[in-house]
Length: 108
Image 1: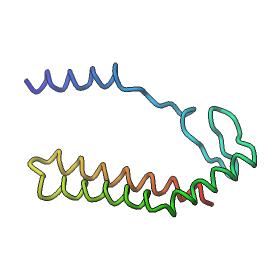
Image 2 (image 1 turned 60 degrees about the vertical axis):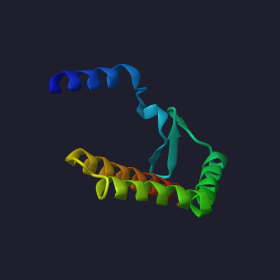
Image 3 (image 1 turned 30 degrees about the vertical axis):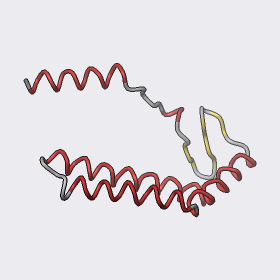
Image 4 (image 1 turned 90 degrees about the horizontal axis):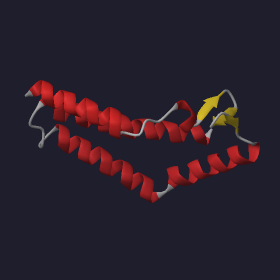
């Protein structure tokens, strides 16, 4: 039964999950920003930095991060029933930290 479950999860992930490629993300190389293999103009870079600063300072962003961290904490503690729950909670903390670092990288 476990092998069937593993097979179904892998199959659905491969066939239904939209893959993100390197072209779909913003890459910061030195002082250049690349998106879809195109170097962003100085105006676009300034706009991104301004938006990153506004988002980082927004009350909504802070609430969203705290919500994710709270759910992660609950998932890992009182609601945890198996080791996968703890792993999932850690992944949620990691995701929040990754978004926070991405935003910080844009503000520079």
